[in-house]
Length: 251
Ligand SMILES: [Zn+2]
Image 1 (spheres, protein in one colour):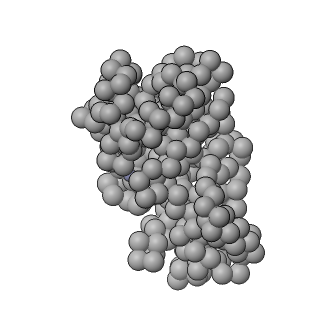
Image 2 (cartoon, rainbow, N blue to C red; image 1 turned 135 degrees about the horizontal axis):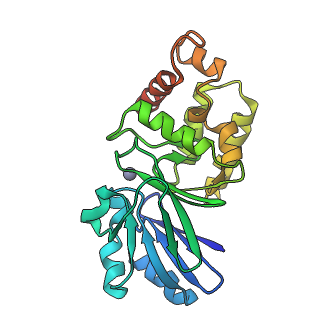
């Protein structure tokens, strides 16, 4: 398998996963032309489009891709039906196209219908988990998002987190403010700042890495709880998450 990352708009990534016979799935096409260019340049045949949720910067390229490839199947949650999805998928559905086999994982929070597509080790999780951060709560509750993140955290440590935005530098700046004495976070922050200065992408990341540096996966951390004004272990972890997410929204 060959993973291709296409940077588009101000900070979006479109992901292509290609098999040995040069078929690919296209994940969250914000735009069409950059994808069509890569397909042509590498003689790749698209097998399907996968949509994680209904936001425009994830589905904006669907029409342009269909112009060139009218029979392309499009898999997505119910909320993407009006954005072009031809195959509506739910929790634990398996998407079989060409040599691909993705399991659908429902991850409500950022939107109510948000899903991820998982084929080990690749997780296409849209705007749910970012490197160093997580998506905003536009439609779902903090409790829903917290359990969605727990679902991701239960996957194998070597899972490749293929998220849809390059937000890592801002996320690590926030993480450093929440856990200023955490050396691992400090070191990763430095590394990310350097990578971005050199225009390097910081994703995909691994779940193992995120468990160490992503504050939203560390709501159980006593220092974190203290630093956001919570008496350690006095409230449910989903409430810690809610407060942390609110801090980030203000940051
Ligand atoms: Zn979104």
